[in-house]
Amino acid sequence: MDVTTAARWADTLAVFDLETTGIDVDTCRIVTAHVGVIGVGGEVLERREWLVDPGVEIPTAASLIHGVTTERARLEGQSAVSAVAEIIAALTDAATRGLPIVAYNAAYDLTILEREATRYGHTPLPGPGPVVDPLVIDKAVDRYRRGKRTLSATAAHYGVVLDDAHDAGADAVAAGRVAQAIARAYPELAATAVAELHARQVDWCREQAESYQSWRRANGEPEFTTSGAWPVR
Image 1 (tube, rainbow, N blue to C red):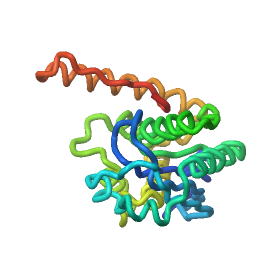
Image 2: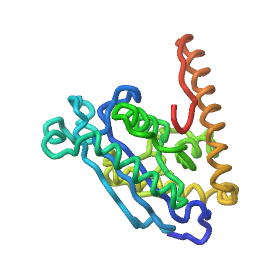
Image 3: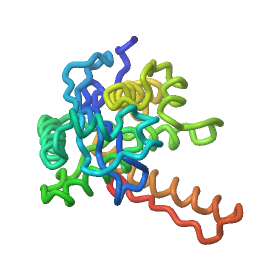
Image 4: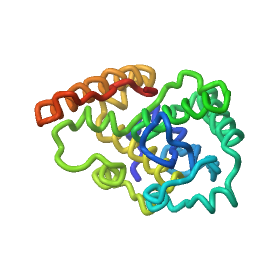
């Protein structure tokens, strides 16, 4: 990997991903989590992972995606109350060290973490910020590219290998490497301070949501609404 043109903010990144019981950020629970750090060449410098007993049944549809059943989570998983506290602490430590937090579709993962913190009486992750969301950035800098914008598809577009999609560790590391690839591909982003990049993503996500909402309403769903709040809904 050529690292000579990598952005300074992308030199060392905290990477974060969750696998959960569903897609509703207000009700779903954490099943697995990864918080790690990657270096300038995308190498894994630190990693910490959690298998969590969410305290509820894990739907079969979710288990088929991430591979964790209710039985396994109950047998091997850490209690949700302690795991959520540890995940927040790990991300807080990374932010204290000045590391941007990378999460693909960050508003999903960070909103769930915020809801889980509230559920168990923990102080939510401060901020959070600065956050780098390769999904939001990619859609802003390459708006008209055809095809899916899943992590797997975006990783393939930028030449990032993702062999074990929907594993929290694999997804987190791939998201970080995609962020670094985007930084190399777009020099203007490489020259942007990470705090400014965070602020731009707030605007980009709102604009993307407004555009998507307009499209859905124009295509047979006149009451459709969606939130553009970022990085927490």
